[in-house]
Image 1: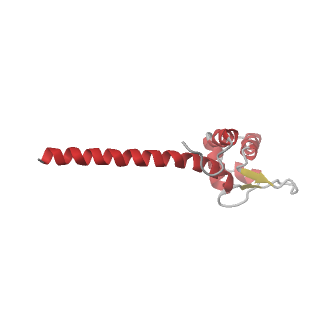
Image 2: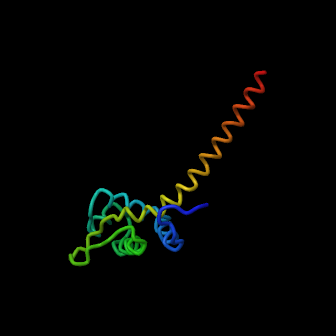
Image 3: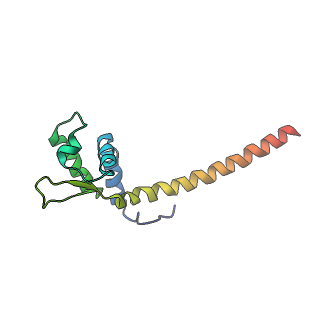
Length: 118
């Protein structure tokens, strides 16, 4: 498959998908999509410790999915959605593949139905 967008870095893709593999980190990203939050605000709905949330935030930060303002005492986090383009581009390649495969299957099924009618 031809690579699209800027998925030229398999290492970046691996880091992004690794970060997205955890449901807690995905939920954190969903919450940050609504706006910037402090670590305590992020930790609020979860039944895990604040240090565990901080570890999740470090993984997301290393993957480039969030950024944190180190100049502020609370170190609020915000989503960096543009990094998700790496994953979206890679998945889009498969969407095109499956779309073509389903189109071929539709053609075969239509042909079989028309043959049965005759």
